[in-house]
Image 1 (cartoon, one colour):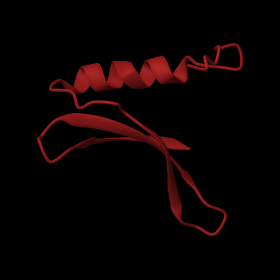
Image 2 (cartoon, rainbow, N blue to C red):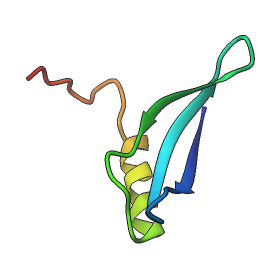
Image 3 (tube, rainbow, N blue to C red):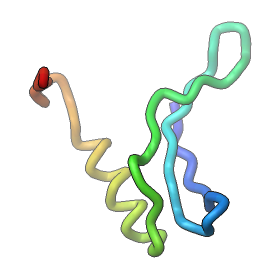
Image 4 (tube, rainbow, N blue to C red):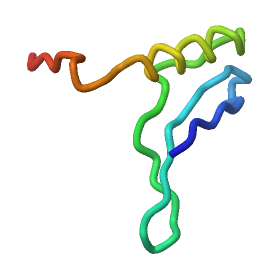
Length: 61
């Protein structure tokens, strides 16, 4: 798996988490919920995602 950081059509920074399909294609698992004017804020968002683990609660709403 890997993160990609890119500029969207509005020139805002976004991220997506990708992985390879067994067949060789690419699957996007998660994406940023918004675009960021500052790339460093986008990178902070990725760090926050990386901090999640099995102990991170799931809330059903």
